[in-house]
Structures are given as C-alpha cells and as structure tokens.
Length: 272
Ligand SMILES: NC(=O)c1ccc[n+]([C@@H]2O[C@H](COP(=O)([O-])OP(=O)(O)OC[C@H]3O[C@@H](n4cnc5c(N)ncnc54)[C@H](OP(=O)(O)O)[C@@H]3O)[C@@H](O)[C@H]2O)c1
Image (cartoon, rainbow, N blue to C red):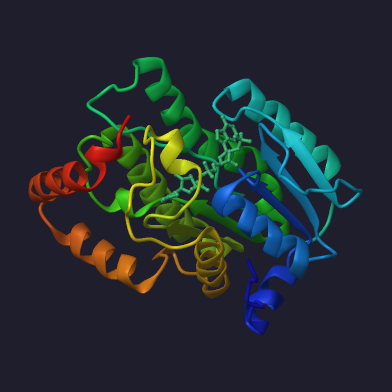
C-alpha cells in the first residue's frame, strides 16, 4: 500500500529527537509508527522493544531491536538497563509505550493468568519503563506517548479488564503530563478506536469483526500529529474523537449497559 508523505511539521517534530524508543514495533500500529520513524528520523537512535523482531527491520548502530517480554517485571528492568547503556548520551528522548493486547469474554476469560499478564503488559510495564527512564527524560527533555484506547473512556463489559487497563493508562498519562510539562517532559495519551491489526485475533476473535476502523498507517499518523501538537490526550480519527467525548460524559453504569449491548451485537458473533 502506498503511504502518503508525512506533513512537514510532523516530520520536523520527529527529527527533534536524538533517541526514540518504542515498544511493540513488531506489528500493527507500532510497526507503522516505526516505519515513519525510520523514514523521517534517519539520524535518531531508534530502539524497538518487543518479543519478535519487526518484519523488514535491519539492525545497525542506530537501529536496535531489544527482545523482551514486557509482561515480566525483570524483563523491563533488563531492557531499561540495556537502553541506558546503548542509547546516545545527549539529545531529546521520545518513548512510545505501545505494546498491549486485549481479551474478549466474561471475566476472567480466557483465564486468570492471561488476564493478569494483560494488566502487567498494558498498565504496569508503561509505568515501569517510563519510571526507569524518567531521570534521563527529565535531564534531557522529551516526550512519553502512551497508546491507550477509546475503550479507556468508559467501562466495557466483556472486555472489562482490557478497558480498565486503558483507563488507567489514559488517566496516568494525562496526570503525568501535568506534572512533567513544566520540567521539559510532555506526555501524550493516544486513544485509537478499532484498527485493523493482529489485535482482534489476539483478543479472541476468529474472523474480522466488521467494525469500521482506521488502517494502522492512518492511526499511526494521527498519533504522531497528537504528539506533535503535545495533546495531553487525543482519540485518533474524528469519529472516534466524537464517540470518546460522548462516552466519557455518560454516567458509568449507563455507559456499561449501552456498551454491553453494542459489544455483544457487534463482536459476539465473531468471538471464538
Ligand atoms: N487494534 C485496535 O483496534 C486497537 C484499538 C485501541 C488501542 N489499541 C492498542 O494499540 C496498541 C498496539 O496494538 P495493535 O493494534 O498494533 O496490535 P498488534 O498488531 O497485536 O501489536 C501489538 C504489539 O504489542 C507487542 N506485544 C504483545 N505482547 C507483548 C509482550 N508480552 N512484550 C512486549 N511486547 C508485546 C507485540 O509484539 P510481540 O508479539 O513481538 O511481542 C506487537 O508489536 C496496543 O496497546 C493496543 O491495546 C489497539
């Protein structure tokens, strides 16, 4: 698929970083973000952290893949130490916490250990990795971008834990932005709606869900524009922005009841 060139301001924004670290660059939204970083920040040192190496990724002195399972605290520690060792000592840092997965079904489907791993990956790992790099971020300036979700704006029955991890990430990120902005570190929470990636298969759907959504490339470009603008939080795509604004304002029990009907109707038939 031919991708549109990135606009000048967003390209300049990307070039303002000496170091870019992204988690989950091996597929989906993360792979699309990584593609933009490779193309538009050729002089930056770019590190990807995920279990598998991104397809088509060529390692070099400025392009490193650090294999790690971020649902394990010890792996986060190990990878943070490796990043501190490998990355250049000067210049602004962009950290993108993007790794995550979902699970569909009545709590704790598919099972409790899987659900707890999801909490560890989606919520604990971003806090852990950001905390481990926080002294460098404060000393050198930069940005933490957290890939949350539209699901973070409301309680979502049948994806209860996933949505709650994203609500955590969203609120944590916005609060961190308020703390860090006067000290040279911005935080941006990016909230995609449905995006056609491996996410739905991983969440327990056997077939395409039929949900209208963005491509990973469009979502990644919207995410980069949110970072460029220093938006404390932004849903990707105008229809998601509208939906997020409405669902965040509903009483939570109403949002849960409406959400349950919508999710059963739209997703139930493709669940495994
Ligand atoms: N797709 C959507 O509709 C949607 C909507 C809203 C928000 N999001 C969020 O967007 C982010 C990216 O998802 P995606 O849609 O691009 O899905 P994806 O294609 O499944 O990508 C998920 C990424 O997370 C990484 N990951 C998974 N488990 C990991 C682990 N234990 N340790 C380290 N990395 C791990 C994967 O890499 P490895 O498998 O190589 O480890 C992969 O690169 C997620 O946080 C997701 O919650 C997605």
